[in-house]
Image (cartoon, rainbow, N blue to C red):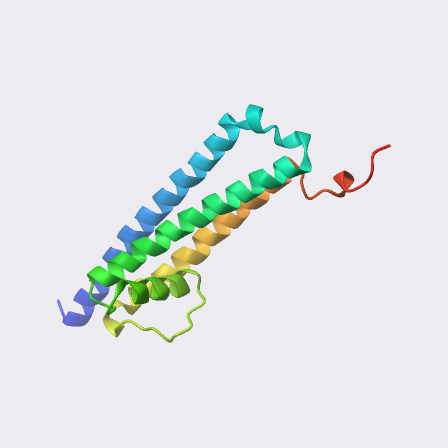
Length: 154
């Protein structure tokens, strides 16, 4: 096996492991958010006021933000463990810009792990889209964006 094929296989293998981990964490995180909302619906009573609906939306957004933060930190820890950055802050910055597909390019890793980072970007786009869909679903179930609550009831 040539060096190039070995390196590509290692990239794809490590990327596959990271995708499986992040998708699993994301799935169970969204399930936990759903469970918490369901278990506390009697206490929260979100359909009784716009403020409660807003509070629930903020809870979901912060929960998703926490999940995305976990994913980014996992990739950053991997880049640091691979010796691709000089410190954790650089790894975290690189992972954040890669995961969110911003890709500023001011912090780079070596070419030997560029397939891994490209797959991180694809992973991030897919998980962020999943998160957006989840938030849209929650928002539409609460009917918080409908205009009838803006109108005065007589």
